[in-house]
Amino acid sequence: MTTQKPHIVGALQAVTVITNSWAQSIRFYTEALGYRIIERGDLTHIQKKTFGRHLGKFALLGYDEGAVVRLIETGNSGALPNRIGAHLWDNGLSVLEACTTDVERAYRKVLRARFGAISHLSEFDFETFGNQANSTAKSVAFIGPSGEQLIVKQLHSWVEGCEGINAPTAAVISVPKHTLQSAYFEVLGSLSNTIFRANTQSPISNSDNISKVGFERLLMSYEQILAHSKQPIFWEYNREDLPAYPCDFMKTGLASACWQGQDLAMLRFKLQESNWAILSEVGLPIRNNPEPGAVVFQGPVGEILELLA
Image 1 (cartoon, one colour):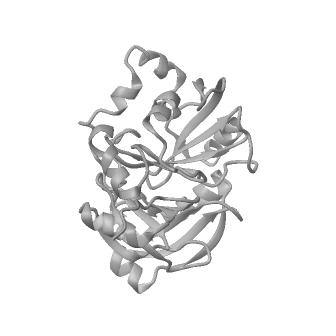
Image 2: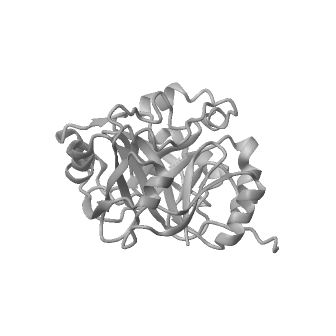
């Protein structure tokens, strides 16, 4: 067996949101965010057997290109969001990220559609990666009908994409740095700890970059940032005693995320060697493929990930 480490490559394909308020969820992504319904259907027998027989129809929401939000209806009408009481930096699959060319307009549109924001519009300076000069960003955080959290950013030094809110660009997975950095490297072949991103050669950003951007600043208002400025956010974020919120298809909200994979045979070997649970060889629907081949596994803080064949 070769010792070459597998790694995640390519773009984010989909993020899964479980909902027991189907009509409101569809309205949130179409009316408030401006997404379109790309495909819709019902989960297959194999998918229901793997992920839960209480799951039923699905819709893929997004644009002609880019990742999609994979909305799946649950028959569990009393299900509660899987991250009740969680901060975004608490361990687990925590939040979707998307960008926009006009965050203030996007903010007003969501509020006009009678959906809530969990932060005020915030503007802050941050140090860009590498040797570039400081830049300015605006952000706001929304909460969907099923408890899923979405951060929308407008980076003044990087303005591109469609009018309105773009397709998801990242799914954030928060893990304690000191205990799991080496584990992620051994299993996935990439350094570091906290965020899987789309459209990069190294989708897991390193901890230095996270500390510079200030992950919480994407949620906190500017006043809150000032109030916390005396204590380094980076070290607070990387505490090892933060609670974990594992993904759970019996609950609602953000349940899994899917990327294109590479060397899945080696990935399976590394997952088994590290005792990370492999859940399925069949993924949930993606564009033009209602039952894709994939390695679906659960990471060390309960996050459910799919790597496509």
